[in-house]
Length: 458
Image (cartoon, rainbow, N blue to C red; front, side):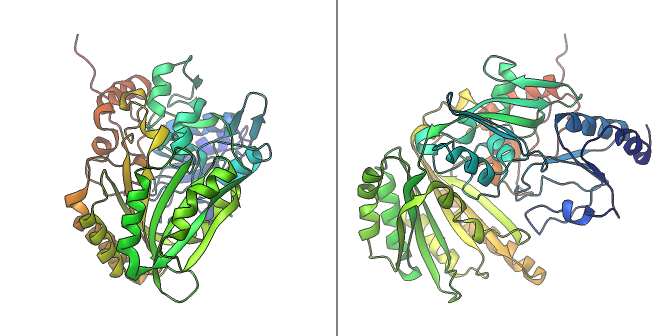
């Protein structure tokens, strides 16, 4: 096995991006991910310019005996987009996007962020289900599921994936689609980064906007129980064109007042959207009403300021099939004790097209109508870390009586118990068999890891 320096010297002769080591200019900035609580030091960072660089990076890691992590947008809260002492394969320079208007498809490289993708597709009045925070990477969100404003109407992001160009653990490049390597295509739609590096992804697009009906209404925390009950009851009859998300948070106006808000997105006709949100605007009435016609791109960046890069984050999340009065009371009581004004409790409602896909059709198991509760503990002062982590854990513990045995892959914390079992559920055995086929050495293991199934004795 060659030394890292020797391998980097050889690789750099053809590498079109940047190979960075500790002490090099930019290393400290490029090793960081979105969550400031994650502080890892890779042995090297391969900032890839294209697919050939990704192949070289995989071969570099093999030759130097390094574990790898892959970063697209770097938003994964558990810090899976970086690594201590291994090779960080960084796709953030890979920004190519091509929109095929006639066929309503788009092909984008693995370093593209959702705000970049949406900007290019919305020029043509097209979109696909994508992240609700614009700085999230398309690859990680899609391979792990892909919750977004369009999912009731068009399914999860992975339901809109047509194909992916993958770099495998042995450095091979292949295409996964319904017609090529179909088993692998099944596995990557929900299996995360376990099977290869998504150098490019191709999506179906749909007519959306550019102006839709959306935005937020807010109420004082004293009315939180009533607002969340209204939210729950309204969710029972939402059309596919509408998505609701509720949130408990501190008002961003500097008052430190705790509030409850409901964000709505109706991606159908504006006249229908106006009628659909009228009950939400009338309830209360709200102390703030910013709900009406809005650019689709603006809606997808509306939450960005609430998730600043570098803030310290610890999240817990799990699914509730029923948002009962008792669960609502527990959530409100927990948020009233929240120690940081940067923290939130988010309740994402799942219904419509995303829930009509059979669990066995893709690796993703998040197919049940209900409520995904995300406990976002966030702060900036390192001295507040113990308290911030404790609040999230205590809130999660208080919710245990109401939780369903389903967890969303992209929200799993780094200390989750049996993460593969709770994320992949009944699909885990098939995923393990495919892992043994495509990555038998478990080269890609800096993820919610799927262990290769043991070889069968003949």
